Length: 499
Image 1 (tube, rainbow, N blue to C red):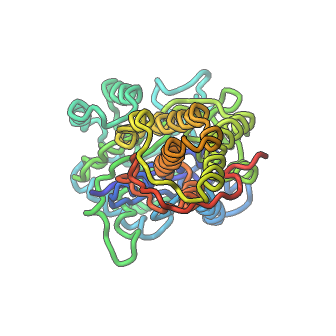
Image 2 (cartoon, one colour):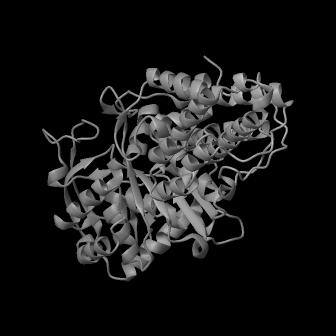
Protein backbone atom coordinates (compact mmCIF):
# COMPACT_ATOMS: atom_id res chain seq x y z
CA UNK A 1 0.00 0.00 0.00
CA UNK A 2 1.23 3.53 -0.78
CA UNK A 3 0.62 6.83 0.98
CA UNK A 4 1.39 10.17 -0.67
CA UNK A 5 1.10 13.30 1.50
CA UNK A 6 1.85 16.90 0.56
CA UNK A 7 2.15 20.25 2.28
CA UNK A 8 1.27 23.51 0.60
CA UNK A 9 4.30 24.87 -1.19
CA UNK A 10 5.46 27.98 0.61
CA UNK A 11 5.68 31.40 -0.95
CA UNK A 12 9.19 32.84 -1.13
CA UNK A 13 8.28 36.50 -0.72
CA UNK A 14 9.16 36.14 2.99
CA UNK A 15 11.17 33.89 5.28
CA UNK A 16 9.74 30.89 7.19
CA UNK A 17 7.72 31.32 10.38
CA UNK A 18 5.89 28.98 12.73
CA UNK A 19 2.87 28.74 10.45
CA UNK A 20 5.04 27.11 7.78
CA UNK A 21 6.59 24.74 10.29
CA UNK A 22 3.08 23.84 11.49
CA UNK A 23 1.91 22.48 8.14
CA UNK A 24 5.16 20.61 7.55
CA UNK A 25 5.23 19.02 11.00
CA UNK A 26 1.64 17.85 10.53
CA UNK A 27 2.49 16.21 7.20
CA UNK A 28 5.60 14.65 8.71
CA UNK A 29 3.61 13.14 11.58
CA UNK A 30 1.34 11.43 9.06
CA UNK A 31 4.23 10.31 6.85
CA UNK A 32 6.10 8.76 9.81
CA UNK A 33 2.94 7.08 11.08
CA UNK A 34 2.23 5.45 7.72
CA UNK A 35 5.82 4.26 7.47
CA UNK A 36 5.32 2.59 10.85
CA UNK A 37 2.41 0.73 9.27
CA UNK A 38 4.75 -0.68 6.64
CA UNK A 39 3.38 1.43 3.79
CA UNK A 40 5.34 2.88 0.88
CA UNK A 41 5.31 6.60 1.70
CA UNK A 42 6.14 9.68 -0.35
CA UNK A 43 6.16 13.05 1.42
CA UNK A 44 6.45 16.24 -0.64
CA UNK A 45 7.02 19.85 0.34
CA UNK A 46 8.67 22.82 -1.34
CA UNK A 47 8.42 26.45 -2.43
CA UNK A 48 6.16 28.44 -4.75
CA UNK A 49 8.41 30.93 -6.52
CA UNK A 50 6.51 32.70 -9.30
CA UNK A 51 3.92 35.46 -9.32
CA UNK A 52 3.45 39.09 -8.49
CA UNK A 53 4.13 38.97 -4.73
CA UNK A 54 7.66 37.69 -5.42
CA UNK A 55 8.26 40.43 -7.99
CA UNK A 56 7.08 43.12 -5.58
CA UNK A 57 9.14 41.77 -2.67
CA UNK A 58 12.23 41.60 -4.89
CA UNK A 59 11.72 45.18 -6.05
CA UNK A 60 11.50 46.37 -2.45
CA UNK A 61 14.83 44.70 -1.69
CA UNK A 62 16.54 45.78 -4.90
CA UNK A 63 17.19 42.22 -6.11
CA UNK A 64 15.85 40.13 -8.97
CA UNK A 65 12.95 37.73 -8.42
CA UNK A 66 15.34 34.83 -9.06
CA UNK A 67 17.79 36.07 -6.43
CA UNK A 68 14.99 36.45 -3.88
CA UNK A 69 13.57 33.01 -4.72
CA UNK A 70 16.97 31.34 -4.43
CA UNK A 71 17.69 32.96 -1.07
CA UNK A 72 14.32 32.34 0.59
CA UNK A 73 13.79 28.89 -0.89
CA UNK A 74 17.08 27.88 0.70
CA UNK A 75 15.75 29.09 4.07
CA UNK A 76 12.66 26.94 3.72
CA UNK A 77 14.74 23.95 2.68
CA UNK A 78 17.00 24.46 5.70
CA UNK A 79 13.93 24.48 7.93
CA UNK A 80 13.06 20.89 6.99
CA UNK A 81 15.90 19.01 8.74
CA UNK A 82 15.73 21.49 11.60
CA UNK A 83 12.15 20.45 12.41
CA UNK A 84 13.10 16.81 11.70
CA UNK A 85 10.89 16.61 8.62
CA UNK A 86 11.38 13.36 6.72
CA UNK A 87 10.25 14.71 3.33
CA UNK A 88 11.27 12.62 0.34
CA UNK A 89 11.62 15.62 -1.96
CA UNK A 90 11.68 19.41 -1.87
CA UNK A 91 10.26 20.94 -5.04
CA UNK A 92 10.94 24.42 -6.37
CA UNK A 93 8.55 25.73 -9.00
CA UNK A 94 11.41 27.43 -10.82
CA UNK A 95 12.87 23.99 -11.50
CA UNK A 96 12.97 23.61 -15.33
CA UNK A 97 11.59 20.07 -14.98
CA UNK A 98 8.53 21.42 -13.19
CA UNK A 99 8.14 24.20 -15.74
CA UNK A 100 8.19 21.72 -18.64
CA UNK A 101 5.63 19.45 -16.97
CA UNK A 102 3.33 22.39 -16.18
CA UNK A 103 3.39 23.41 -19.83
CA UNK A 104 2.67 19.84 -20.88
CA UNK A 105 -0.40 19.48 -18.61
CA UNK A 106 -1.83 22.92 -19.35
CA UNK A 107 -1.30 22.40 -23.07
CA UNK A 108 -3.42 19.27 -22.67
CA UNK A 109 -6.14 21.33 -20.97
CA UNK A 110 -5.95 23.81 -23.87
CA UNK A 111 -6.10 21.02 -26.46
CA UNK A 112 -9.12 19.55 -24.67
CA UNK A 113 -11.01 22.79 -25.34
CA UNK A 114 -11.14 24.17 -21.80
CA UNK A 115 -9.28 27.44 -22.49
CA UNK A 116 -10.30 30.62 -24.33
CA UNK A 117 -9.14 34.22 -24.74
CA UNK A 118 -10.92 37.05 -22.91
CA UNK A 119 -10.68 40.21 -20.82
CA UNK A 120 -10.49 40.16 -17.04
CA UNK A 121 -11.66 43.13 -15.02
CA UNK A 122 -12.00 43.08 -11.24
CA UNK A 123 -10.38 43.28 -7.81
CA UNK A 124 -7.05 41.60 -7.20
CA UNK A 125 -4.91 41.05 -4.07
CA UNK A 126 -1.18 40.95 -4.90
CA UNK A 127 -0.33 39.37 -1.53
CA UNK A 128 -2.80 36.51 -2.08
CA UNK A 129 -2.10 36.40 -5.83
CA UNK A 130 -5.86 36.04 -6.07
CA UNK A 131 -8.61 37.62 -8.15
CA UNK A 132 -11.45 38.21 -5.66
CA UNK A 133 -15.10 37.53 -6.36
CA UNK A 134 -17.67 40.02 -5.08
CA UNK A 135 -18.40 37.95 -1.97
CA UNK A 136 -14.67 37.74 -1.15
CA UNK A 137 -14.07 41.51 -1.11
CA UNK A 138 -13.74 43.04 2.36
CA UNK A 139 -14.82 46.47 3.63
CA UNK A 140 -13.71 49.39 1.45
CA UNK A 141 -12.53 47.00 -1.26
CA UNK A 142 -9.91 45.40 1.00
CA UNK A 143 -8.45 41.92 1.28
CA UNK A 144 -10.00 40.19 4.31
CA UNK A 145 -6.80 38.16 4.83
CA UNK A 146 -4.13 40.86 4.51
CA UNK A 147 -6.27 43.88 5.54
CA UNK A 148 -4.83 45.77 2.55
CA UNK A 149 -6.54 47.62 -0.31
CA UNK A 150 -7.26 45.56 -3.41
CA UNK A 151 -6.06 46.58 -6.86
CA UNK A 152 -8.42 46.99 -9.79
CA UNK A 153 -7.10 44.97 -12.73
CA UNK A 154 -8.09 44.92 -16.37
CA UNK A 155 -6.10 42.84 -18.83
CA UNK A 156 -6.35 40.46 -21.77
CA UNK A 157 -5.89 36.90 -20.49
CA UNK A 158 -6.44 33.29 -21.32
CA UNK A 159 -9.34 31.89 -19.30
CA UNK A 160 -9.99 28.44 -17.86
CA UNK A 161 -13.58 27.21 -18.29
CA UNK A 162 -14.12 26.54 -14.59
CA UNK A 163 -17.88 26.96 -15.00
CA UNK A 164 -17.98 23.90 -17.26
CA UNK A 165 -17.04 21.66 -14.31
CA UNK A 166 -19.72 22.72 -11.85
CA UNK A 167 -21.90 19.63 -12.28
CA UNK A 168 -18.94 17.24 -12.23
CA UNK A 169 -17.60 18.86 -9.06
CA UNK A 170 -20.98 18.69 -7.35
CA UNK A 171 -21.26 15.03 -8.31
CA UNK A 172 -17.77 14.28 -6.99
CA UNK A 173 -18.58 15.90 -3.65
CA UNK A 174 -21.81 13.91 -3.44
CA UNK A 175 -20.01 10.65 -4.17
CA UNK A 176 -17.05 11.30 -1.85
CA UNK A 177 -18.23 12.98 1.36
CA UNK A 178 -14.72 12.86 2.87
CA UNK A 179 -13.06 14.52 -0.13
CA UNK A 180 -12.56 17.66 1.98
CA UNK A 181 -12.05 17.47 5.73
CA UNK A 182 -13.07 18.52 8.33
CA UNK A 183 -16.77 18.65 7.49
CA UNK A 184 -17.03 22.40 8.02
CA UNK A 185 -14.51 22.91 5.20
CA UNK A 186 -16.36 20.42 2.99
CA UNK A 187 -19.49 22.51 3.48
CA UNK A 188 -17.59 25.70 2.70
CA UNK A 189 -16.19 24.25 -0.53
CA UNK A 190 -19.49 22.82 -1.78
CA UNK A 191 -21.23 26.09 -0.90
CA UNK A 192 -18.73 27.97 -3.05
CA UNK A 193 -19.37 25.57 -5.94
CA UNK A 194 -23.16 25.70 -5.61
CA UNK A 195 -22.98 29.49 -5.56
CA UNK A 196 -22.13 29.31 -9.25
CA UNK A 197 -18.65 28.95 -10.72
CA UNK A 198 -17.22 31.63 -12.96
CA UNK A 199 -14.41 31.13 -15.45
CA UNK A 200 -11.03 32.24 -14.10
CA UNK A 201 -7.90 33.79 -15.53
CA UNK A 202 -5.39 31.15 -16.51
CA UNK A 203 -2.65 33.59 -17.50
CA UNK A 204 -1.25 37.06 -16.83
CA UNK A 205 -0.27 39.45 -19.60
CA UNK A 206 1.44 42.06 -17.44
CA UNK A 207 3.98 39.76 -15.80
CA UNK A 208 7.11 38.02 -17.05
CA UNK A 209 8.05 36.17 -13.84
CA UNK A 210 6.24 32.90 -14.36
CA UNK A 211 5.87 29.83 -16.55
CA UNK A 212 5.44 30.91 -20.21
CA UNK A 213 2.19 29.90 -21.90
CA UNK A 214 3.31 27.50 -24.66
CA UNK A 215 0.64 28.60 -27.15
CA UNK A 216 1.14 32.33 -26.38
CA UNK A 217 4.68 33.31 -25.37
CA UNK A 218 3.54 36.87 -24.56
CA UNK A 219 1.90 35.63 -21.36
CA UNK A 220 2.77 33.55 -18.29
CA UNK A 221 0.49 31.26 -16.36
CA UNK A 222 -1.36 32.67 -13.38
CA UNK A 223 0.76 31.52 -10.44
CA UNK A 224 -1.88 29.23 -8.93
CA UNK A 225 -2.10 27.05 -12.03
CA UNK A 226 1.66 26.66 -11.95
CA UNK A 227 1.80 26.03 -8.19
CA UNK A 228 -1.05 23.54 -7.87
CA UNK A 229 0.50 21.27 -10.42
CA UNK A 230 3.59 20.74 -8.23
CA UNK A 231 1.84 17.85 -6.48
CA UNK A 232 1.63 16.02 -9.79
CA UNK A 233 4.79 17.20 -11.57
CA UNK A 234 7.20 16.35 -8.72
CA UNK A 235 6.54 12.64 -9.05
CA UNK A 236 8.00 12.59 -12.56
CA UNK A 237 11.46 13.75 -11.47
CA UNK A 238 11.74 13.53 -7.65
CA UNK A 239 13.72 10.31 -7.77
CA UNK A 240 16.57 10.26 -10.32
CA UNK A 241 15.94 7.91 -13.20
CA UNK A 242 12.39 7.04 -12.08
CA UNK A 243 8.87 8.26 -12.71
CA UNK A 244 6.82 7.72 -9.55
CA UNK A 245 3.54 8.97 -10.97
CA UNK A 246 1.95 5.60 -11.51
CA UNK A 247 3.03 4.45 -8.05
CA UNK A 248 1.80 7.43 -6.03
CA UNK A 249 -0.78 9.39 -8.04
CA UNK A 250 -3.46 10.26 -7.10
CA UNK A 251 -2.22 11.82 -3.87
CA UNK A 252 -3.57 10.29 -0.67
CA UNK A 253 -3.79 13.59 1.19
CA UNK A 254 -3.14 17.26 0.56
CA UNK A 255 -2.66 19.28 3.77
CA UNK A 256 -3.50 22.97 3.30
CA UNK A 257 -4.41 26.06 5.29
CA UNK A 258 -7.93 27.41 5.11
CA UNK A 259 -6.88 30.55 3.23
CA UNK A 260 -6.15 28.48 0.11
CA UNK A 261 -9.25 26.27 0.29
CA UNK A 262 -10.83 27.64 -2.90
CA UNK A 263 -7.80 26.81 -5.01
CA UNK A 264 -7.36 23.27 -3.71
CA UNK A 265 -10.99 22.19 -3.45
CA UNK A 266 -12.43 23.91 -6.55
CA UNK A 267 -9.75 25.01 -9.02
CA UNK A 268 -7.46 22.01 -8.50
CA UNK A 269 -9.98 19.19 -9.01
CA UNK A 270 -11.45 21.02 -12.01
CA UNK A 271 -7.97 21.35 -13.54
CA UNK A 272 -7.35 17.65 -13.12
CA UNK A 273 -10.71 16.83 -14.66
CA UNK A 274 -9.85 19.08 -17.60
CA UNK A 275 -6.52 17.27 -18.04
CA UNK A 276 -8.14 13.81 -17.72
CA UNK A 277 -6.13 13.06 -14.58
CA UNK A 278 -7.34 11.30 -11.39
CA UNK A 279 -8.28 13.53 -8.45
CA UNK A 280 -6.52 13.38 -5.07
CA UNK A 281 -8.23 11.17 -2.53
CA UNK A 282 -8.64 13.81 0.18
CA UNK A 283 -7.82 17.38 1.12
CA UNK A 284 -7.48 18.26 4.82
CA UNK A 285 -7.85 21.94 5.66
CA UNK A 286 -6.23 23.07 8.90
CA UNK A 287 -6.81 26.32 10.70
CA UNK A 288 -4.51 29.20 11.58
CA UNK A 289 -2.12 29.58 14.48
CA UNK A 290 -3.11 32.92 15.95
CA UNK A 291 -1.21 35.55 17.86
CA UNK A 292 -3.12 38.50 19.27
CA UNK A 293 -6.22 37.16 17.56
CA UNK A 294 -4.73 37.30 14.05
CA UNK A 295 -3.23 34.68 11.73
CA UNK A 296 0.55 34.65 11.91
CA UNK A 297 1.81 36.49 8.86
CA UNK A 298 5.10 38.13 7.97
CA UNK A 299 3.21 41.01 6.39
CA UNK A 300 1.31 41.59 9.65
CA UNK A 301 4.50 41.30 11.73
CA UNK A 302 3.05 38.85 14.28
CA UNK A 303 5.18 35.74 13.89
CA UNK A 304 6.96 33.32 16.18
CA UNK A 305 10.35 32.26 14.88
CA UNK A 306 10.45 28.44 14.93
CA UNK A 307 14.25 28.54 15.09
CA UNK A 308 14.14 30.56 18.33
CA UNK A 309 11.51 28.24 19.79
CA UNK A 310 13.57 25.14 18.99
CA UNK A 311 16.72 26.73 20.37
CA UNK A 312 15.02 27.06 23.74
CA UNK A 313 12.69 24.04 23.90
CA UNK A 314 14.13 21.60 21.36
CA UNK A 315 12.69 20.33 18.08
CA UNK A 316 10.49 17.61 19.56
CA UNK A 317 8.95 20.10 21.97
CA UNK A 318 8.00 22.34 19.05
CA UNK A 319 6.51 19.38 17.17
CA UNK A 320 4.55 18.31 20.24
CA UNK A 321 3.23 21.80 20.91
CA UNK A 322 2.07 22.26 17.32
CA UNK A 323 0.04 19.05 17.45
CA UNK A 324 -1.14 19.44 21.04
CA UNK A 325 -2.01 23.08 21.71
CA UNK A 326 -4.48 23.70 18.87
CA UNK A 327 -7.00 21.06 17.80
CA UNK A 328 -5.79 20.24 14.29
CA UNK A 329 -8.28 21.60 11.78
CA UNK A 330 -9.31 24.59 13.91
CA UNK A 331 -7.90 28.03 14.61
CA UNK A 332 -6.13 28.48 17.93
CA UNK A 333 -3.89 30.83 19.82
CA UNK A 334 -0.22 30.13 20.50
CA UNK A 335 2.25 31.91 22.75
CA UNK A 336 5.58 31.52 24.45
CA UNK A 337 3.74 31.01 27.74
CA UNK A 338 1.83 28.16 26.10
CA UNK A 339 5.08 26.49 25.10
CA UNK A 340 6.38 26.72 28.62
CA UNK A 341 3.21 25.28 30.16
CA UNK A 342 3.09 22.28 27.81
CA UNK A 343 6.82 21.68 28.10
CA UNK A 344 6.97 21.78 31.89
CA UNK A 345 3.60 20.24 32.70
CA UNK A 346 3.34 17.47 30.11
CA UNK A 347 6.64 16.71 28.42
CA UNK A 348 8.93 17.15 31.41
CA UNK A 349 6.65 16.18 34.31
CA UNK A 350 4.18 13.65 32.91
CA UNK A 351 6.18 11.86 30.21
CA UNK A 352 9.81 12.58 31.01
CA UNK A 353 9.47 12.04 34.74
CA UNK A 354 7.46 8.83 34.23
CA UNK A 355 10.27 7.44 32.09
CA UNK A 356 13.05 8.57 34.43
CA UNK A 357 11.56 7.21 37.62
CA UNK A 358 10.57 3.89 36.00
CA UNK A 359 14.05 3.33 34.55
CA UNK A 360 15.56 4.26 37.90
CA UNK A 361 13.34 1.78 39.75
CA UNK A 362 14.20 -1.07 37.37
CA UNK A 363 17.88 -0.23 37.82
CA UNK A 364 17.58 -0.09 41.59
CA UNK A 365 15.21 -2.98 42.29
CA UNK A 366 16.02 -5.40 39.45
CA UNK A 367 19.64 -4.61 38.55
CA UNK A 368 18.56 -2.83 35.34
CA UNK A 369 16.92 -5.97 33.88
CA UNK A 370 13.22 -5.82 32.93
CA UNK A 371 11.48 -8.64 34.81
CA UNK A 372 9.50 -11.31 33.00
CA UNK A 373 5.79 -11.27 33.51
CA UNK A 374 2.33 -10.46 32.27
CA UNK A 375 1.04 -6.90 32.24
CA UNK A 376 -1.36 -5.80 34.94
CA UNK A 377 -4.84 -6.77 33.63
CA UNK A 378 -6.42 -3.42 34.48
CA UNK A 379 -3.76 -1.49 32.57
CA UNK A 380 -3.82 -4.05 29.75
CA UNK A 381 -7.55 -3.50 29.34
CA UNK A 382 -7.09 0.26 29.17
CA UNK A 383 -4.36 -0.12 26.52
CA UNK A 384 -6.35 -2.63 24.48
CA UNK A 385 -7.11 -1.28 21.00
CA UNK A 386 -5.00 1.85 21.49
CA UNK A 387 -2.89 1.41 18.35
CA UNK A 388 -6.00 0.74 16.27
CA UNK A 389 -7.67 3.85 17.67
CA UNK A 390 -4.64 5.97 16.87
CA UNK A 391 -4.59 4.60 13.30
CA UNK A 392 -8.29 5.33 12.91
CA UNK A 393 -7.85 8.95 14.00
CA UNK A 394 -4.73 9.57 11.92
CA UNK A 395 -6.49 8.11 8.89
CA UNK A 396 -8.75 11.15 9.27
CA UNK A 397 -5.76 13.45 9.95
CA UNK A 398 -7.03 14.05 13.50
CA UNK A 399 -3.56 14.64 14.87
CA UNK A 400 -4.57 16.26 18.13
CA UNK A 401 -7.21 13.66 18.98
CA UNK A 402 -4.76 10.82 18.30
CA UNK A 403 -2.14 12.46 20.50
CA UNK A 404 -4.69 12.89 23.27
CA UNK A 405 -5.51 9.15 23.16
CA UNK A 406 -1.82 8.40 23.72
CA UNK A 407 -1.45 11.02 26.43
CA UNK A 408 -4.39 9.64 28.40
CA UNK A 409 -2.39 6.41 28.77
CA UNK A 410 0.68 8.32 29.92
CA UNK A 411 -1.41 9.89 32.66
CA UNK A 412 -2.88 6.49 33.50
CA UNK A 413 0.64 5.06 33.91
CA UNK A 414 1.51 7.90 36.26
CA UNK A 415 -1.53 7.08 38.37
CA UNK A 416 -0.56 3.41 38.27
CA UNK A 417 2.85 4.28 39.76
CA UNK A 418 1.15 6.05 42.66
CA UNK A 419 -1.40 3.25 43.13
CA UNK A 420 1.16 0.46 43.20
CA UNK A 421 3.97 2.36 44.95
CA UNK A 422 6.88 0.15 43.78
CA UNK A 423 9.14 1.68 46.44
CA UNK A 424 6.89 0.15 49.09
CA UNK A 425 6.64 -3.21 47.32
CA UNK A 426 10.45 -3.35 47.16
CA UNK A 427 10.63 -3.25 50.95
CA UNK A 428 8.39 -6.33 51.33
CA UNK A 429 10.10 -9.62 50.35
CA UNK A 430 6.68 -11.26 49.88
CA UNK A 431 5.70 -8.73 47.20
CA UNK A 432 8.39 -9.69 44.68
CA UNK A 433 5.94 -11.02 42.09
CA UNK A 434 3.74 -7.96 42.42
CA UNK A 435 6.78 -5.71 42.01
CA UNK A 436 7.78 -7.65 38.88
CA UNK A 437 4.31 -7.19 37.38
CA UNK A 438 4.32 -3.51 38.26
CA UNK A 439 7.73 -2.79 36.74
CA UNK A 440 7.04 -4.91 33.66
CA UNK A 441 3.72 -3.13 33.11
CA UNK A 442 5.34 0.28 33.43
CA UNK A 443 8.18 -0.55 31.05
CA UNK A 444 5.74 -2.04 28.55
CA UNK A 445 3.33 0.87 28.87
CA UNK A 446 6.11 3.37 28.29
CA UNK A 447 7.35 1.35 25.33
CA UNK A 448 3.91 1.26 23.71
CA UNK A 449 3.20 4.98 24.11
CA UNK A 450 6.70 5.80 22.90
CA UNK A 451 6.26 3.77 19.71
CA UNK A 452 2.97 5.57 19.10
CA UNK A 453 4.57 8.93 19.88
CA UNK A 454 7.37 8.40 17.38
CA UNK A 455 5.70 10.44 14.60
CA UNK A 456 5.31 13.36 17.00
CA UNK A 457 8.61 13.00 18.91
CA UNK A 458 11.02 11.18 16.57
CA UNK A 459 14.25 12.06 18.37
CA UNK A 460 12.90 11.50 21.87
CA UNK A 461 11.21 8.21 20.98
CA UNK A 462 14.39 6.69 19.60
CA UNK A 463 16.37 7.86 22.61
CA UNK A 464 13.87 6.45 25.09
CA UNK A 465 13.40 3.14 23.28
CA UNK A 466 17.17 2.69 23.35
CA UNK A 467 17.13 3.35 27.11
CA UNK A 468 14.40 0.72 27.43
CA UNK A 469 16.58 -1.79 25.59
CA UNK A 470 14.18 -1.73 22.63
CA UNK A 471 14.56 -0.50 19.04
CA UNK A 472 11.40 -1.52 17.14
CA UNK A 473 9.03 1.16 15.85
CA UNK A 474 6.53 -1.05 13.99
CA UNK A 475 2.94 -0.39 14.95
CA UNK A 476 2.32 -4.13 15.02
CA UNK A 477 4.37 -4.19 18.24
CA UNK A 478 2.50 -1.27 19.85
CA UNK A 479 0.53 -3.47 22.23
CA UNK A 480 1.05 -4.17 25.88
CA UNK A 481 2.82 -7.49 26.41
CA UNK A 482 4.45 -7.67 22.97
CA UNK A 483 7.84 -6.99 24.55
CA UNK A 484 9.40 -9.78 26.56
CA UNK A 485 11.26 -9.33 29.80
CA UNK A 486 15.01 -9.62 30.04
CA UNK A 487 16.00 -6.39 28.32
CA UNK A 488 18.62 -4.24 30.01
CA UNK A 489 17.58 -0.66 30.67
CA UNK A 490 19.93 2.31 30.72
CA UNK A 491 18.81 5.29 32.83
CA UNK A 492 20.15 8.57 31.52
CA UNK A 493 19.64 12.30 31.48
CA UNK A 494 16.10 13.72 31.61
CA UNK A 495 14.32 13.59 28.26
CA UNK A 496 13.04 17.14 28.69
CA UNK A 497 15.31 19.06 31.08
CA UNK A 498 13.78 21.98 32.89
CA UNK A 499 14.57 25.27 31.19
